[in-house]
Image 1 (tube, rainbow over the protein chains, first blue to last red):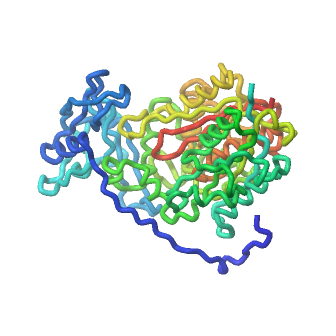
Image 2: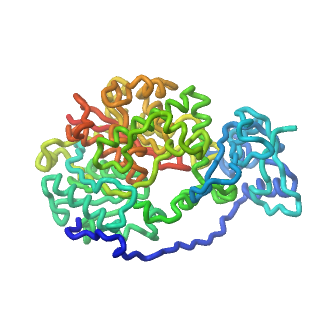
Image 3: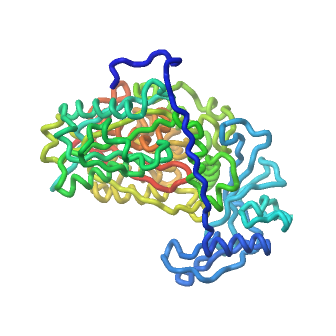
Length: 157
Length: 384
């Protein structure tokens, strides 16, 4: 430990650093299927493990339980239910948001897992576990093959 | 049988900001204290191997391992860095000694989050780049999602979580190492700003800076280095799944698997009866309740009742986080688990000052790697 310490904060020197990292994250075979189906057909796909029978969403090329290859895709449509939710009131720097953002895990009938996404067209105090919701897609021309091709999930009409 | 003991501990203590020292000077201070505590050993000749616990992104370096040896006295010596939580680091030190090739091992962990200007952006970088990150927003929304489901499934309440905050911030008042001691009550927590519903501002641990070093030794040399060795009876660790989409949202499955591994090694069959006290991760208030249940220190769904009835407070039948936990000591990144270990050691040595528990022989320390992970580790420590 230092025997002489700096006691006047104005005397402290520091060096401002910036870690710049640009990446391309490859979506892979299962990711290509999943995001293409959202982009082209407004469908959410899962992958079925032929060993344990579980359907996982989002799909992966391998089963995390059996460590077997998954080769069968399943169309899960675009409707699900709210499994859990939260309402976020601050941004990533801690500043209060003008409008809170609602996030949920949406699960789909017959599938293990679900999708994390935003909720819309609903007030925070109206959200409940078990609530049926459906995906609201961006117009086709605006879609890029991203999770944001779904704008949010809204209560089923 | 070859046994492993903790024979020395040293800490800088934890503070919200530390502009007066660099991370290296912080580590040097903690190491100097630990070497002195372990019979004044010299790192230049008496320590067989060194382990530091660090993560590049927290540190702001690529290959941070290279920036570790000098401040620990480990230049030209046998050192590696574990990229994990500090109880995973402890497990690694334990295994080195168990091999029979090492008698004395130094373990280091620190956090200096006040150096990170975009701390929560680094957290966000731990999330899936295609499924989660594009959604944007503060990454602690993951904790809000988990708390909602945890309360829904277990019947524990937001008020009981607020009691955890009141208890831990109060315990921290009696801990000179803690950054966030405060006298607050349940209403203070429930009336604090909404952040990640159901989490309010005071439900969330705030960052803190500090370092801890521990010296571990085999039973063959432990008595030479310490009059009051603390024995590592069992260690365990586990990861559930990296995917937010397929993980369990109500239980801390990783902590249960890690605890079962550690209990088995320690020969503990009934933890709620055999364990005297626990230090568990409480980065968010509900995590303390969730982790108490995962460690089988109570029956499922009853952790909230324990805090409500005073059982997890100092003086209760199962004191939890007498140190103040992360809520009281602060979130010190990878050193958060080491804080839990440090308090467990101090309690078992009878050196916990005004928060000292009476008649304690078996303590459990547990860590979680934080949002968005499902990784945790557990250590069972005794003073006999």
